[in-house]
Amino acid sequence: MNIKLVLRNFLEKKGLLEKTKNAINKYKLKRNLTKRYTFENRMKNKDKVCIILAGYKEFLYDIFFERIKKFVPEDVEVCILSSGKYSERLSKIAEQNDWSYLSMKRNNVSLIQNVAINLFKNAQYIYKIDEDIFVTKNYFETLMNTMRQCEKSAEYKIGFVAPTIPINGYGHLNVLKRFGLVETYKNKFENPIYSAGKDRMIESNPEVAKFFWGEENYLPNIDEMNKIVQNDEFGYEVCPIRFSIGAILFKRELWQNMNGFKVSFGNAMGRDEIQICGYCMVRSRAIIVSNNSIVGHLSFGNQNKVMKEYFENNQEIFKIHRKVQE
Image (cartoon, rainbow, N blue to C red):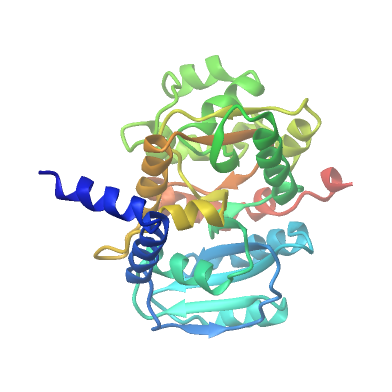
């Protein structure tokens, strides 16, 4: 006898199946939360929130937050998150900009994102950005428009929406195609394919990271690239591989249906990515990549040491390029 099936049929007959499912899901989500945190609350109760995972790349903050301040729309509120530490500097940045700040002694990125989303109960749309992402003009608006256009077309159920990111296992090949550099890249480095992983130069070779930041002038700066694709016809692609989630937009509904990000041992770096990409694949939720928004990503782990030095010696490359913002 299948006890689960018998119980399901019983609950269904009594009209209790949906209520039982909801209760179980709420319990599962509660297990992935905690009350041990510090929250500097400047919540505006808007329906859109941008959560920023920060705290470990302070050398980027001046330029990173300059871009956030410049490009975040008024209808999106911001909350900075620091997992595993309290940062006086991040607290001050949040205070100066009338943003919220959430910190947690335990270092677990899945847990702190759960807490933040749970606190912002009115937020139906969540932008998540890592501290090494350099947003560009209309980033927020373009992702929202792409999500709504995709929903309107009804071709897919949407998992999450992302911009095109040059230093990214999926996005790098789209950038090369758009700017006519596939053969150049192939001759300099390797045959570009849609693939994420440390075995690919896009995630391991710092010279590749420099290439996508405009070294040797093969590519324009990210603001210029973004301006070019902003003027392209509306378009998007469905990513069929694991996607690096440094900058994404998803709905609260998705997070609830996942019962939040699963909180496991350690700092959980990368496990939130595995979970959300895996969930989207299993539940037939499309990963949508906008062709009309390009943002910058400093580098991946094996590139970080060299790219930190490169950043510090070439900050003009990373600053907002005023001419293309007009």
